[in-house]
Image (cartoon, rainbow, N blue to C red; front, side):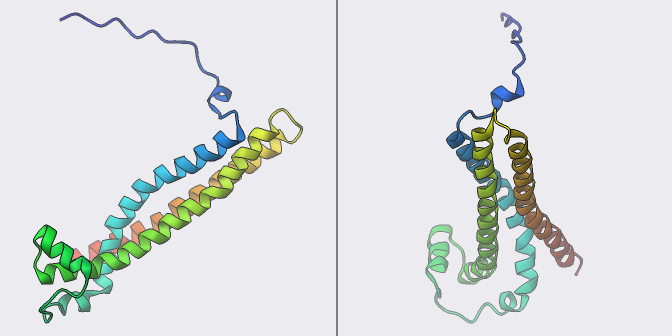
Length: 172
């Protein structure tokens, strides 16, 4: 087997070269980044919030069993496509509805929180080379921190509550 030649290192790329050079690119890159980063946040939040739904809807979950036919299209789909029993499909629906509602709210907060960040990024590109450039950079950094707080804050609270919920479930 032949060895590959070592990869040659090129010249260092200055940080300024990595920044978008048009306001439109700055705006859309921030919105796209916020959208892509929302997926791992939603996944972690979904895992955590299932325990909250189980604890909060324990009576409804324990009361499943009297129905003879599926009460919703989701239950019919789960029974037909996944082969779940009526009871399992009903329990799945009971847990998934509040989890999905919480995830929709988290998705909305994450995306809406990215709008000021994206707008500040576009304004920062327009202000480059002017007397307003430093102030625009400060506003951009503040908007990024607000977006991080709006995205990570609710997710962290949900994860901590979810961990407490799982601990409650497993220690009872």
